[in-house]
Image (cartoon, rainbow, N blue to C red):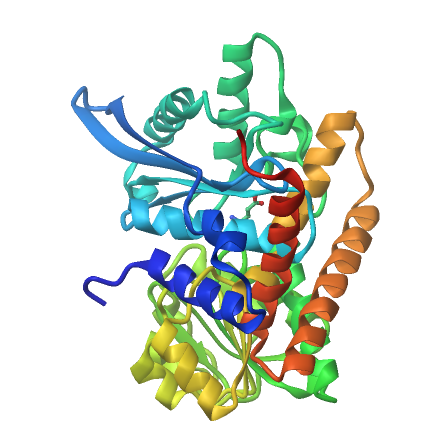
Length: 416
Ligand code: GLU
């Protein structure tokens, strides 16, 4: 959508939540503004000897409840408004699951697939050096997001540590296990999506295994949640990646499709009963639960009118536009919002950081038990507000988070 600003999307929901609980402007005015925004120009020597300068950002939306926390995105569409919105959503995400973090986000405007490993390494190290004054285990802790992974986190940790003169594992989360990553972190967002979906369904008297589930996205969130759903006996009727989607009314062999898509376009996958569908056909396909695990602004007003699912779970950040949200609410579609549904990643990031600060290694089971406990507790508080007030889950989640933020604001006061 031209002229669309995702930060306005955030402000819109924030105002609705503040109005619903009758907050005074002074109570939440500061939360409308990101605390700090840093823009950096990152020069890199390419493998062919040429020089390129990339744009990068780190925004700390809030450190009211603890250090900034949030991923780093490498994507061609990264821009300051997107990073600001993603940082604000992190503030609300951490508050809704009640972990002691604020919200931050970073990114570089780049298509990482077009760079060699060495170029990517130089880009990451230089970017880290340039955002160094902002980050640190007590200040702001990056993590993976779209286009970044454990390897990128390892380089950030190493660069930061070299600059400090000692190893600081707690400066980033989502690292490889061998250098301080946490068991269960790689699957955490997908696992959280599954936990929250099952909780929501159970409140409606339904079971996930009786539902037809369509998943947009096959990455760290979509791919893993689809695999976990399938492993518990659920039927995944559609799945997609950037090259398109597949549909099978009796359920896809998800593990096989994901394996296939690692080396070939999904369009080339052939199996009886499986047909190729476009991204829009996936979003409007015949299903009960639609998991959105790709990027922002996927469900637009036009698509919302055609959605057949009765429940949407936002595995991605901001996948539903404001207009689409209104249409879906009117249609009675239940939307489990991003700040709740995809919080599993940051919850296990918190587990990783706690382990790093204490030089401990938890068992995978301890991590998964903590994840489930935190997610269900957050779900319960959001669901209760939603029922009490008769409002959508998104607004309820914002109210839970906003009230926690306002309490911190009031107790801390304004400096000076
Ligand atoms: N990028 C993930 C998110 O949007 C994880 C952030 C984190 O673990 O800090 O929630």
